[in-house]
Amino acid sequence: MLLKQSLKSSFLFILSITFLISCQTEDERLGTFKVSKFTIEANLVKNQDDSLQVSVFKNRCKEYFEEAYLKFYENDTLTLLSQVGEFALGSWDSKNQNTASLNFEGFAKVKFNIEEQKNEKGEVDFLKLTGNANDKYSIILLIKKDNYYESKNSDLMSFENNWWRLKPASHESNAKIKARVLGQIDFNVAYFQLIEDNNYRSFMVSQLKSPFKFYSNGIGFETLPMERNATIFYNETDEKTGYEYYLNGLKSISKYPSDPKSYTKGYINALKEIRRFVELDV
Image 1 (cartoon, rainbow, N blue to C red):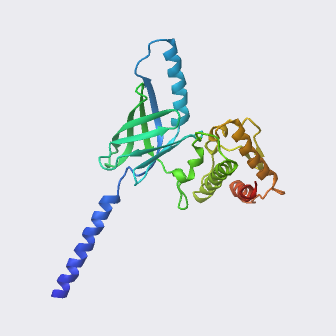
Image 2 (image 1 turned 60 degrees about the vertical axis):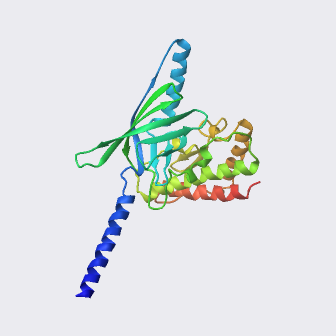
Image 3 (image 1 turned 120 degrees about the horizontal axis):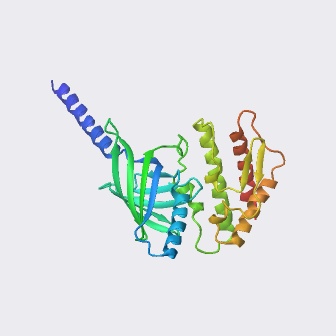
């Protein structure tokens, strides 16, 4: 009888602990969301100059928010990766779960209030983020769960995979420029590996911020100025140094290492070969 009671107590204890853990970690907000819609309104427009500034601001916001992805992490970190490769780092409050902020380097800092929109099953379907930027603009984002940038092997929304996108505040040494180039190449490799892992039928290249052009039978190169790539370097001088690393890496390939079954596997093979050369280059 004592044995049965002991076993019953142990079972209830384990069940209670499991329940508590699941309650603590099961947060529907954790994970990646895609921006389904965004709106930007100026709080006050006085004259033509204000109107022009509003237009510039809205165009810049479009680069960040149009078909962008946001990810909420357990450590209260929040990241954003846009369709054209812009990246922002911020935070959210997991305690009251109704505030978040994003820092768009050299552009704006936005604080958001978060509102949940649930479906018929009571599950979080959309999040509505309402924020204020630079005390001049009201921004509303409607975002929906979408784990496009995640696979069993990688998380391409993480800061560790995107730090190289943040433009430096000053001139960098060749070693730091090379590290930035390697970080960009690593993201390229990880992205095409994600395409393979998730069996996606298509891929995008604008968010790669890459000087490489991807064709069905190989990889080409974009000559200067590299519009998608320039924003990751401090100035034109640093950009040219980075350009040399990319170009020398591509030239190091004697024969394109294609794959008979997959274009993306061919890209992975080539990019890894380029990376090995760049890592040794001086």
